[in-house]
Length: 401
Image 1 (cartoon, rainbow, N blue to C red):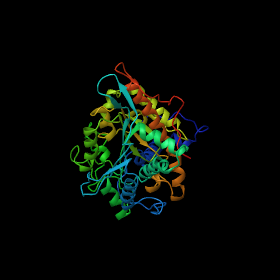
Image 2 (cartoon, rainbow, N blue to C red):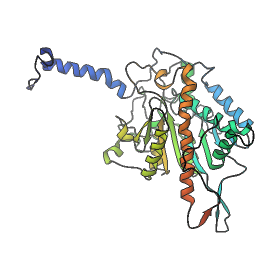
Image 3 (spheres, one colour):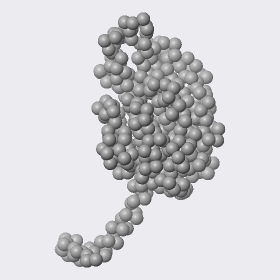
Image 4 (cartoon, rainbow, N blue to C red):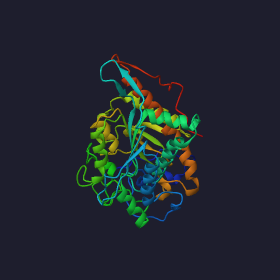
C-alpha cells in the first residue's frame, strides 16, 4: 500500500510531523487516550477524588427512612407504596404526590360532572447506581413542595405548594435500582452502574433491545442483559404506565447537563425517526434549558450524543407507550474526560451539594408550570368550559423562598 506524502512544510509544522508513520502513531495515541471516555467505561473501581459523606448525601437506608417520614407526616398529600421490589427484595419506593382532597377541574356540559385537569407525571430516579445526585434532587424537590403545607395561610410558600399540588398528579420512583445502590455502598465501587447482576437498566427496556448502542459483555457498563426486561427492576415503570395514563415521563440522571428527546437508539438514528408531539416536547426542553444556569443542551438523543443508546426507558415510553412527553435529563456534571474518576463524574463534592440542588430546582418548577398549562389546553374542548383560568402565560411558577 502506498502512503501519500504529507503536504505540510517545515516552516509551518516542523519536518517531523510530515512523517506519515509519526502521524499514524499520534492518531492512534489520541484514539487510545480519548475513545474510552466517549464510549462506555468498565465497571471496575478506581481511586476516587472524593467520597460521599452520608451526613450530607442519603445512603440507601436513609432514602427509605426519609420517604417513610415524609409520607407519615403528610398523609393527605403523599402516599407511599413499597410493594414494588428489586430482584433481591428491596423496595423501590413509589411516592404519589397530589392534593387528594381536591383537584383543579373543568366542568363538562355532560352528566359526567367534574373531570380532573391535573397533569400526570412520572419521575424515575436511581436507574444507575452510581448517580447519587438525582436522588438528592428528588428530596430537595419534596422538601420544597411540602414546605408550604405547614406555612401560614396567605404566605407565598403556602400559595406555591397549593398551586402545584392542585394541578399536578406526581408519581416518583425514588430508587429504581436499589440493589445496585446497595452494591455501590457495600463495595465502595463508585463506578458500578448496573443492577446486582450488572445489567444497565437503561439498556434493558423493550425498545430496539440488543442494538449496537448497548453491550453483550457483562464487564461493560452498558451490559444489556440476556433479554429485554430480564431485570425485575423494570417492572415498576412498565406497570405504572399500564395502570395510569401519564402525560409525561422523565428519567433523571447525572454526568453532564443535557436534555434528551426521543429517540436515542441506533435504528432511529439510521431512519431519522422523530417522536410524536415533537414540537411540544422541543418547546418543553427549551424552557427547561432556559431555566438553568448555565443553559443545558437539548435535542433528539441521537443528534445530541456522540453514541446511540438502545433499550432505554425513555425511548420505550415514547415509542411503545406513546406518552406525549418522554425525556431523559442529565442534571449535573461536565462530561467524562481522562481526569475524571467515577463519583466526581456524577456527583458534586459534599460541600457543593446544596448549591447544586438549588441550581436545578428551577427545572422542576418550569416542568410543572408548562405541563399544567399544556394539560389545560388539551382538555379545553367543545365539550366543556374551564371553570378556573390557569395563569401560566406569565412564566413558571415561583417556589417558596
